Amino acid sequence: MLDIKEQPGASAIPAPKFLSLATETIVPAAFASKSGRCRSWIPLPVGFSVLVLSILAGEQVRAWLHLFIPGNVLGLFILLLCFQARLLSPQLIEEAANRLLHVLPALFIPLFVCAIDQEQFWSKLGWVLLPILIVATATLWVFVGHLAQRLLCRSSQDE
Amino acid sequence: MNEFLSTFFWSALTLAVFFGWRRLFIALRHPILHPVLWATIAVVVLLALDQHPVSAYRAETEPLVWLLGPSVVAMAIPIWKQRALIVSHWKTLLLVVALGIMFSACSVLLLGPFVGWRDAKSLVPKSVTTAVAMGIIEESSSGRTADDQLVAPLLAVGIMISALSGAVLGPLVLRLTGVRDRRAIGLALGCASIGVGTARAFEIDSTAGAFASVGMSLTAVCAGLVLPWLLRLI
Image (cartoon, rainbow over all chains, first blue to last red; front, side):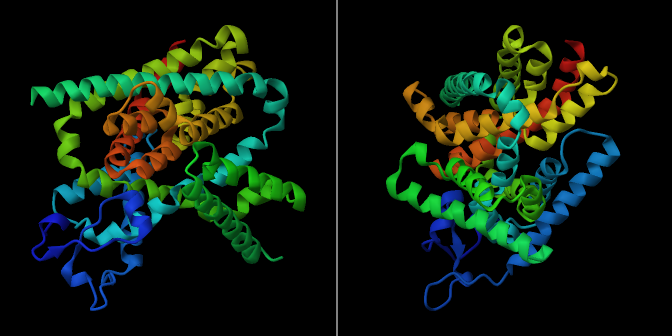
């Protein structure tokens, strides 16, 4: 199966605004209708089903190997292996993936609402821990950011 | 309101509030207006005004939380598109993630004398994907006495603070401290601020997003293997 970027006749057409948040989208000419609008002939539910099946496969691997790593993280690696082995085309899930990545930040809101509701925590030490944890997290960004920047630049120069 | 309507109402309201804030964020481009922060606060206020229990809200928005699973798998697409770049730097990525996990654990353990060792240890996996972090806490708590059990609600708050601060302040702090490489910005946000940080990296560009996805996934895998062992040791 051909990769998205390798497909003959591929042409770039402006992607919907939300797609540009996630990734550069190159849509094959066969996908474009006469009006120039993208009309995918691979329905969204198929892509979504593949994502769910990947999670189920990940959960199964997790159960077999008794790992802590959640099924969705394992599912991500399984899906990448399927792309590599050319068992699946990335095109199959691209539309569903882009839509999910568009709403991803919103999916955390219910979890954060529950965390804010931890009255016992906030009354005890929340207001002390809040600034300390922000500083600890900021230190981690700076550490990882600088380390990664230095090492990535060095390895790019070596190449 | 029956169960289905209630689920639909609160899930739709959560999304509507988020996308409303996102419009404002895109229009004004100020990091403090990040929609995840303000949409969370707006939902808390709405729940309080409606006197709707948070536990009921959590149950009613379960479909949204469930979508987090497929969303993590969906990150395969940007990772796949950046695979050449990622594969060529795999040693660097692994080293950065491993050192990031150790740095995060040490920085939290330094809080021990101030907040108590049990609370500090509970916060060690604060920069790891929620599902893995909770698994680490459960595993590390087994076999301990009741007084020595690690505190999952505390960890939930720690994860929220790491994630939200990543969305609001992460790119700004990185820019001010001289981190300009988009790959490094992505890795930092993915390693420290999990899914919310990764989503923020996607708003910067696809390269930052792909590196954030890799950082978050590798952190989950490495932390799942290393941290339970470390927490049992200390």
